[in-house]
Length: 263
Image 1 (tube, rainbow, N blue to C red):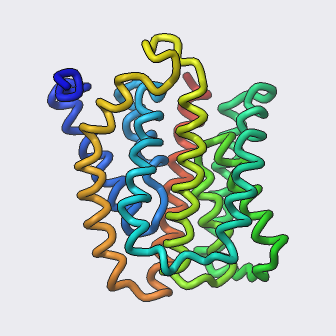
Image 2 (image 1 turned 180 degrees about the vertical axis):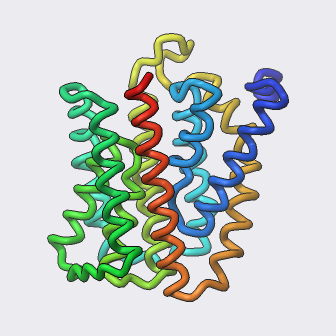
């Protein structure tokens, strides 16, 4: 118990981390996605991603559970099954591909493509995909694959769903439900993967719970604030703000990849 109460970072760095997670929570509360992308990008500036990524998976699960009760009636059941199936099949494919291709250039390419798509949609390009079973499965496959390769499958899915004219409440609720599923899968995978330095023998060592305990209050406060902001937004405002968010998150992914290439 004492170890859990020991801060994982010195006071100033901990304060910075809490601010990052609070901001990421606001985005999650408003849009239903984006928490991992912002948190990992911000925290990796001061600590190794390997130390915090498992905790971020755990926080994502907590975030979805905290939001799901209020949105479960809005989840689009025609979409969620196909999206979950595509993620289940292709998250492992994306992870496996990293064993054969250079990781950073691949992440850079995917981030750049997503940013270009979001910019086109933001500038008024109106792609109108029909929500057939094939389109739903394809959206799950693409988001699952990108999740496995670059851990930004939520961004890819948001780009795809913005082309099918889904009402904001339904889009947000469906994103929350799918992220709960995909993060449980990711958390389970982390539990099975060897972690080297962790006493438990997996990536989910004692530090995972300690990071989660310290960061969870800031995330939940941000989610509450972001959820209140969503309540008064019109469909057009929501679409515009989500596309702005997608452009920003994709840019963060591109900049992280460029930083990795240069270093």
